[in-house]
Length: 323
Ligand code: NAD
Image 1 (cartoon, protein in one colour):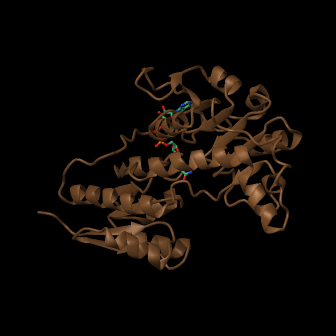
Image 2 (cartoon, helix red, strand yellow; image 1 turned 90 degrees about the vertical axis):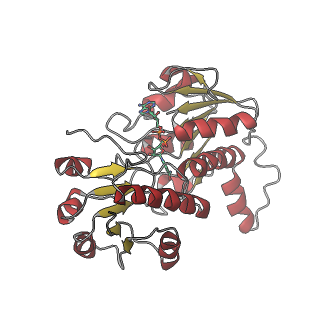
Image 3 (spheres, protein in one colour; image 1 turned 60 degrees about the vertical axis):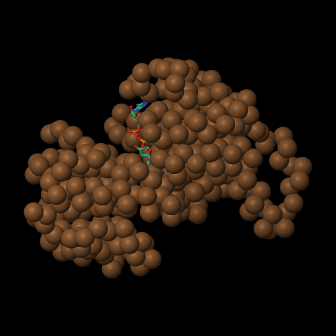
């Protein structure tokens, strides 16, 4: 016997976004949404829900405490390490599942967008042109191609592998560091050590989760060991890169450029050091935020909730272990 479920959406969305979500919802589910990004409203509404959907807005231990009926947290993407209070879930045997569907392609494509954009200073050229400045020659000495470059991927899971396939299509040579991956000629990048990836890549791109182990994985020391003309791309998470060290390297000419979708402390303000640099392309944490991705995610997520309602095994469930 299936039961009806109340599903809380933890982030504040727009009416159009809620419509898109509801258009993918199956029977027996009621979506509970926020009218404001306010914890008092959040705690009052989540209290009556069996399921919570989490996106960028963290589901805190306080929200879990308020959610007296909560049985399942479904992340809309995969980056739960810094957005879900997993200890609070484990303490009450609340389950956690992820939605890799929809996320991977969007982030992999955005990685290429930022690599190309940084290599060609596309954002700077566009902003300058809108001010009437036509830099037909000024960028030639600093603009590079992806072809024949070594691309180093740190983290070689779903997104890293899809990004590597796309870099390969541009004629790049891909190497990757990921302790969990078994090297194989079938993979789209050659396995390498962390040191080799950091020191030999022309383009270094990050695809690891943010955790205590990956906090400032790329700091001043690692940046100093990168090639003088390297490009750094981060579509993973802010905090994996030491932003202050990166900004000072980019300003000093140590690195050629960077393409960044994620930052330490989001949103960043207009007076952030990155905003004054011509050799950085910036986007506001939108790698996975396509209309296509949202549709794929919601279809997959609600198929999982149908399994949950029916008492069947879930796809992409995280085996939570007590701290
Ligand atoms: P995944 O779990 O498939 O792959 C992550 C890989 O990183 C794993 O293979 C793991 O072994 C590896 N890894 C972990 N720690 C490492 C370390 N210290 N050094 C090297 N490798 C390490 O996850 P995914 O789907 O590929 O996503 C990767 C990350 O991308 C997510 O954790 C998330 O933070 C980020 N992400 C960002 C956005 C965005 O909008 N910018 C969207 C989705 C995901």
